Length: 196
Image 1 (tube, rainbow, N blue to C red):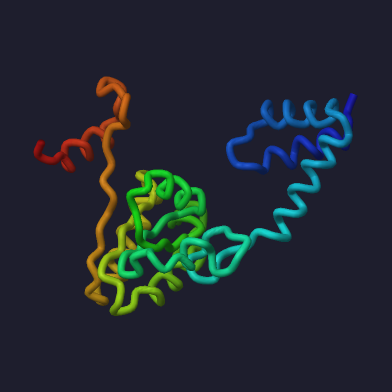
Image 2 (image 1 turned 90 degrees about the horizontal axis):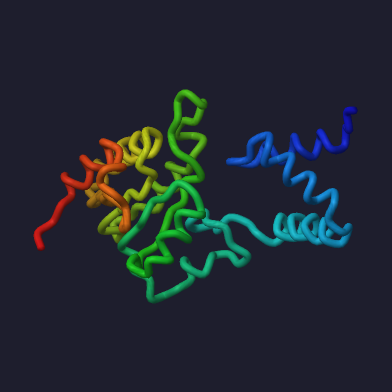
């Protein structure tokens, strides 16, 4: 028996990142057996967030006020700019409470195989933001092929500006086991070691 409405709901869930066919079906079954009010609240939350949340006109992160709270905070070091791929990366860095500069969200990473070039991510906006006031740009793209490619591309583009360009260090996670570390992580850990 084919249920078109159910199949459409599953199909829409599968479009979400990290949701495969089985997870999509579980979500669909959950929503269809939940009280109507619960499903309506989810629908309303999606609709309201689509209306209220937008990109910051300065750094591109998600915000309900423009400019965002971070860009509006006068205590932030405006000479230090951290470049990330997605808004979620800003939240992850902010949790550490170690970075007091400002951010620039690219909204993606270079991936020629997926047809994502410099025009599809906000490299141009980053270049415009690197004024003589900016003393350092920290590249905090993901430690994968796309992130590395993006970091190298940006570093090359920023070289003529004379700004200091740095890359975050990568290594073993706290609580991790060396035996299970991949080669790239282990190499980075050794390469970025420091004296005790």
